Image 1 (cartoon, rainbow, N blue to C red):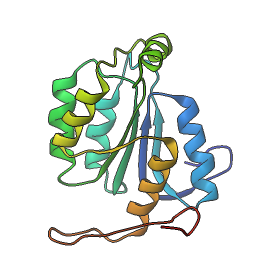
Image 2: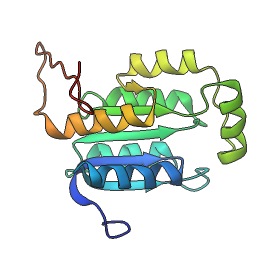
Image 3: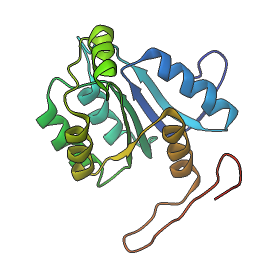
Image 4: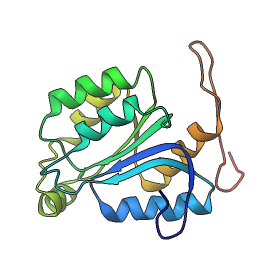
Length: 168
């Protein structure tokens, strides 16, 4: 499904706790020729949450890479276990909101999420196999890289630089 008459079908799934970030990725992705299998914005997660969508995307044959924007999770242990299982099959690019004390307060008001310590979150998600990113731009670049490159097998290394401006 395309949004706002934009976007093309592809292999990137994106699940976001923020409708604004989902819309921004659609707009940026359209400009950068990203192809989306599915995009979901789930807000406060009262009915369905990041766990439900991550399980779905793990089984979705049209999805090759999963992007996530999460402000917090109500079940960190289950999220860790799920990311650990899914990341062995499909890359998970994770952008965590509410990383600072002010950001955590904003996330709490926005979706009712408790975000906890970002350092702990980042290390735990990295141990589970997620690719942590620090900004919207890094999220977008990383998703584009996974869309554009063939699957990297164990033992191979890819070094990418200068997507935006050719430097690096």
